[in-house]
Image (tube, rainbow, N blue to C red; front, top):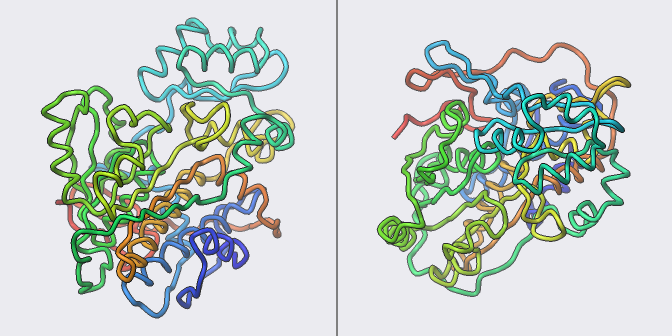
Length: 418
């Protein structure tokens, strides 16, 4: 785990890290060292929080990390569990391999059926994986050929992702117009205001973590694109929320009012999707000097897939993870949505480190991450002996009528809903 942490901390900007200790018990057993990724990203985020709050040491419990990395699976509302994947979100055998589809959202499901008809399994079986991928992506749906890691590395999208750093940083020369909040108590992000324009898991995990650390987080969703209830509840703890249609002048004016008093903006849409509303990182820091902007995407900002949609399961399939984690008969998956959660913690850590630096410099910062680059990192981490043994009991807590995973680090409890 130490090698993975050192790589993550270097990607975050390096420098002396707070002292940390990790209870490195066997968790998240997989062919790939996903446990090292999980422990490293959470430890890096905890160290960044400690740096902002001037804490001297960090302690990480592997059982809590394992539970937090599968938080959406542990969510209960009055004892009710939420299903995570639609029947059409699955591996399907193609004429020459496998295809992974995603249809959890109604508009993606409709586009998938528009191309493949009612019997998706039969339609894919008589097509090549590449043909399915090309046709479905062209229609705005989601289906990706399952590749080996070598096939991904030699592909144009894979080569574009390989050119990206794990975390891309750029400084904003503009100076923050107000003094940073004075740290008090045990939540180092208290007093900072965050606008959360993210969806699904990775981005919301980052902003949920910032909320746990004391930030005033406001999640903004478009009313015409509702989120899945289980995901929204799981990642919404500690946040406020609203709906704004940025295509409407009145809602756009409301957003600009919010931006005027915001410290951090986190976005999780495809590169270019928010640009038409003036919400590219460059446009945001131009209107709000000293702003910290963190942007997340599936495939990064370069290459032929830069503007493609994507989710953790699809990135696992396209980049080679699914075949490594599978059997001779069928592709497999990681024991958690580790690309989502790991990238989310790195995203939160990048924000925290930028805020810590801003105390002395006053300048803003832009950080950009993508799931596919986190996948490349995981594939390249040093292998270690297969983790064995029974997974620890989940570390859960209650917030209102919800049973949820405890935070991956910190006090062990979530703040009350606002």
